[in-house]
Length: 132
Image (tube, rainbow, N blue to C red; front, side, top):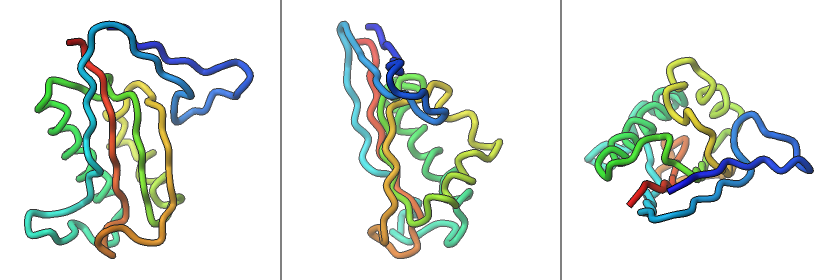
């Protein structure tokens, strides 16, 4: 399996994501549902704290990737929903978050007015590809 990260020269290279990723060869595709900062009792963890909620969500996504034999290097797409784009960008750029997304996946960031719980500040879903 081969992954190719492509930033076409007619579009500027974005510092946070790759414009196009192709995957060829025998592979297993993995979709991981939107992860929210939610405890087992369905309540929000760390209400009001973007960095803490972001780290919580990323750790849960990390565990899900590992459960299927994947790593962050295998992630090809990320979709993020957030109540405040600017506050999320600050959290994503914190030094403690740099271990995630060592390679930049394709990405979409969407500002929303509310998620499934009013105390959730973000939700992230990802897709990955690993060799079969």
